[in-house]
Image 1 (tube, one colour):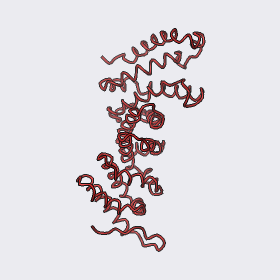
Image 2 (tube, rainbow, N blue to C red; image 1 turned 30 degrees about the vertical axis):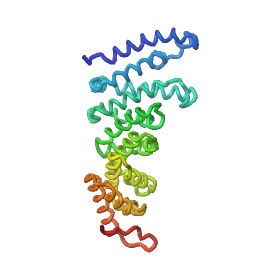
Image 3 (cartoon, rainbow, N blue to C red; image 1 turned 90 degrees about the vertical axis):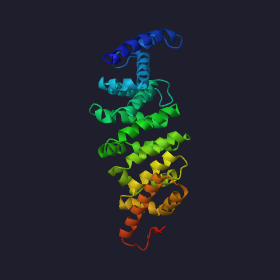
Amino acid sequence: GGVGTLVRCKDLSAKDGMKKDSADASSETKKEIRNRKTHSGMNEQQVEAMAFCLKKMANDETNRGVMVQQKGIRLLSELYNLGAAIMDASGGPDSKKGMWREDCAVALARIAISTNPQLYPQGSMLTMVRPLMWLFGDATHELHQFEAGLGLTNIASVDADTRDTLVMHGAWSALTNLLASDNEQVQRVGVECMANLVMCERSIVRLRDSEQDIKLFIMFAKAEDMRTKLAATGGLAMMTQDPDVAKAVAKQNGVKELQNIKIGCRDVNVAARVDMALANIKEALETAAPQKDDPGEKLEAK
């Protein structure tokens, strides 16, 4: 059963850590190991073993709900923060100390992928955000970036207030690390998550003055990967519901780009998203008062 699972994990990791003490004695004395205690009374090797054990538990989807119920999110977040503090104190991100924080972040990502964020204990969603965003830029494996992206996408699907909070805490900027990946699947999940984040006020405010963000959406709307194309065109359809963003998209040659995307892709779902974006842009341009210095881009009927 699930009762006592995390407790047994702690006991197991403590025993594992004792074994590692002896194995590593050649590089570090037992006295030094004993003296380097964490706030919980365990040394770093024991904490590392616990983090590894929790990550293994999170591999099994059936364990993830139990981990949420038994305060696993809180435990993983505390261990992650401890690892981050030790790494920073030991020479920054290249330090080998506190490396267990990646195991903690990956476990949190896997929990976030398949569990309902609305069932998390109060405040737990925010404690997960920092580790997931850290994986975007510092994960040692592309799979971990991908999993973090999926996890954040699930959290971003909760409601507009949650999306606003994610953007406020830097999620939008952090996701650009995924867009820069050479891995198509990592890029895709980054675009999908950003498309979810479009549906909040903070993102709309950002997009009104961000040519670069709009260019990114237009670029990925032309991607060969269909899921990436769907996410990007969906993001454009949603963001152009705001008249100011619609006009900003038009200034980036958005009308012509969207028309070309529709011509070059026969997928009905992509076409529907493109048509919605074009209709939004047309309405925004027709409603806007003409300006001599900034005529914008005229929408040609097709």
